[in-house]
Amino acid sequence: MIATVKLNNGLTIPSLGLGTWQLPESEELVQSLVSALQMGYRYIDTAAIYENEASVGRAIVQSGLHRKEVFVLSKCWAANRSYDSVLRAAEESLRTLQLDYLDAYLIHWPYTKGDPLAWQSVNIGTWRAFERLYEEGLVKTIGVSNFQMHHLVSFLARANIKPAVNQIEFHPGFMQKNTVQLCRQHDIKVLGWSPLGHGSVLDIPQIVEMAKRYEKSPAQIALRWCLEHNVIPVTRSLSAKHQEENLEIFDFKLTAEDVALIDALPITAFSGLEPDHVSF
Image (cartoon, rainbow, N blue to C red):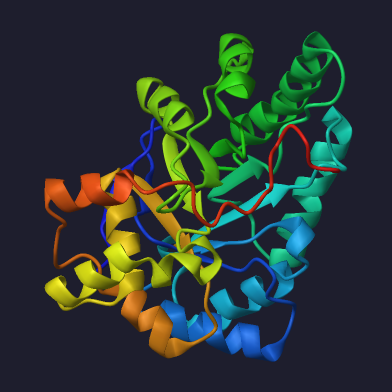
């Protein structure tokens, strides 16, 4: 059974998520999500830009689970940064998902263009709409995604409601230590996307060797390492076999020595998606 952790607003989130990035709208996706939900997954991660929210909504209905049993997270795309466009984007996501509320809604990427005072103002302006969605109950949890330390410092000083989560790239070989530390200081839960480094992590010799010792797969070692750092990994797979394997990370722990060994890896499998330099 997947453990849950408490967020700074008192709500809980499952400590393993099922991601849907680059999985297009399809009956295959619907059935894969239904299978995963029936297998035990309770947190599905999507976004407007993924263009698969309809499949996520259909899967929840077909799973037979009560709405309250599934934690649904979606994200507001970079094209929607103004107050009114955020509200419209949230309404559209809810309509597409066929839901009355979202368990979590995130700013997908920080605005970083131009003078720091300018981009800081844009980000907090976007956040004001998120705060309204939260106050109206359309979104149970609000947060950010891909916000690094320097994006967060001024943001936190001006936010009326503190973000509950920050979803960032996090995997062996790419830890973003300063950002994670700042999030911990402010009780912001870190969610890790690409926890397997797009699969590259699975071939790292130290992790392969560890997998043999623990009688686990390299993927299970990498995901467990995320949990050891109190980071919630968001995995992605259409394969029922891999989904089931990823669930089996709660019955063992890594030693402090093995965690440190993975921590010491050089930069590996970085996606190249640098918030200050992306084109969107």
